[in-house]
Length: 63
Image (cartoon, rainbow, N blue to C red):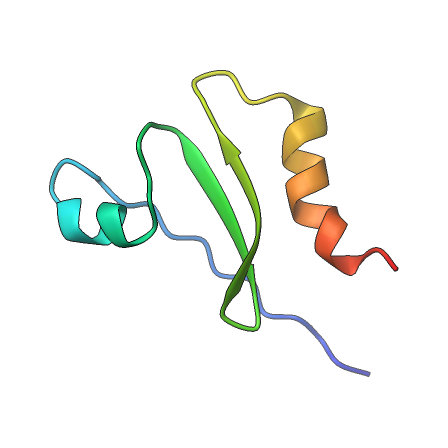
């Protein structure tokens, strides 16, 4: 059985402008989901819905 590892990072894009640019983050908050070092989901905007976050988190695992 493989157990996934989750890591959550909070980045201040005003300070880390180069990092924000490399991930094309233009606004906050932005949630980016990665799987095997590849972006597989993204939710952006000041008022993310529960539905949009759940889709970003679960969609990579759906067959």
